Length: 131
Image (cartoon, rainbow, N blue to C red; front, side, top):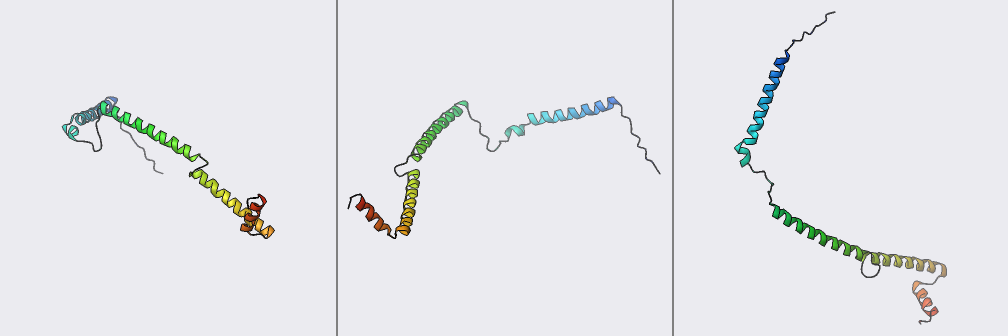
């Protein structure tokens, strides 16, 4: 069986430090060149807008007033939705459910009594003395 022996070269510690320091210097010079380059200052970033403090304050005021307006509209809408009477969504749902209940009641009564729905209405009106 053949065994392989790997012999590693020993590199002195001072040489490693000198290589690392050269790399750091190159990296730092690269960073300084990027920060100080004229090309970067002339290039405009698309979509980036620089605003003054007065414009920012003006926009904040407008946004706050718009938020207050929307809050008032939301409160009014919630109040209208909670109403039971009038032409609101809840009152229409209630009206539909009551109508379905009385139609089913009328059909079941017609099956049991053999009296038609208009006949049932006439009987109720005569019972209450309206006719």
